[in-house]
Length: 512
Picture 1 (tube, one colour):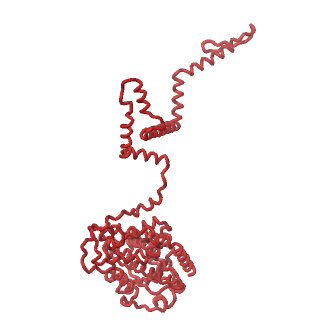
Picture 2 (cartoon, one colour):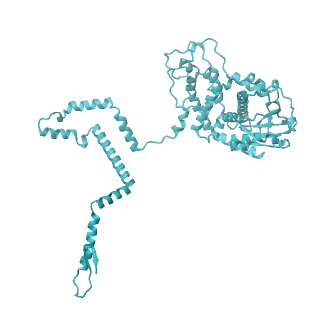
Picture 3 (cartoon, rainbow, N blue to C red):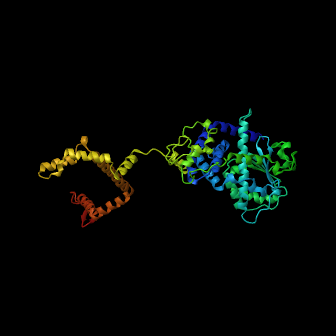
């Protein structure tokens, strides 16, 4: 238990330390929302649900921690999750959508552990009968529903405790999975992968998972789960005995089925958690306008500006969570805007929205390095090859009209010399076109010289053999051989006595 307390204390210190980064993430996501609203034609309800999601600082902290507090990667993951939420219509999953799972005490929140984290109890013996096909489609809405309730629950608990005298962060929850009297469980690897993909949309929301009454008949299921879980996720799973839960949960907070003193009976009508957060979600969505709007949302950007505005770059972090929801309510009928107005009520332009860089290019934008001098010069030259500016053309025209270059006349040699001097003026009065031409020629000569030198070094062995072949072809070896024979002959015919023994070399043969 001390380990869990120390872990939560470290997370709380990190949460307080990174408040500025959390505010930056929220402001950056808000800047992306107007473009997202325009692109996907979101309604007021969907926009309000997204704003409610962005206000969750605990979720922003989870994504930052998951991405090692890298702002570009965090923004990329958040925008991808927001698009997933819009595609799955998370805000529309209500109690009526998951009634099949709430008729029995199958999955519900009950009390808190010793660290103050909410406890999610899952009793597999009350799991409804699963269909023979499309198990993933059957369980996905309920899984999203439970994860969304857990996200809202932990966010509100954190906000309440931070405002009290004993601040504490509630980053995750304790999950108790009871396998007692469990019926045949699905052994589908695709179901496990889908469940893991859903957990990635809610990173770090499950702190500890205790598998109770886990018999040997479920070992195959655990071995299959280990194939799709990360090392961090596997380390969070434990197999304690029911008697060992006292170190995690108080006896009065533990169910009687788990050797506790808490009541076992559970009823949906008496569950405060489900009722509360479903009511909170419904109240967060604005009511439809009393009178029809003259401008449609699908074909007009002015209607977007009338209910939403861009967050400025220098928005104060303290004002992000308090004053941002007011523009989401519909504007009164006397504030309707026309297409010709220059700005909206919130001082934002009513024309086309300024493009915001996509979240997929954020990591590239943070990794761009300044270009080198050589590459910048080449880029400048290549860019200028596509056309000449009008200012440069006017300047050239004035020079031609004022100077009347003498190379246009071909009457005498003096005119040719003056023409050459005008074609190649001095460096002090050289036009920009000649400078660019000379610079381009120098760069080409340098590149060709480097290329020739590089090929020469690479193929030097081949050049050696070519040189040897040329030497042998010119019979240089015969010349050297003749010189050697001549030197031996001179030594052999040196004057000596009549009886002296000497060397005699004839026709390439040496005799004594």
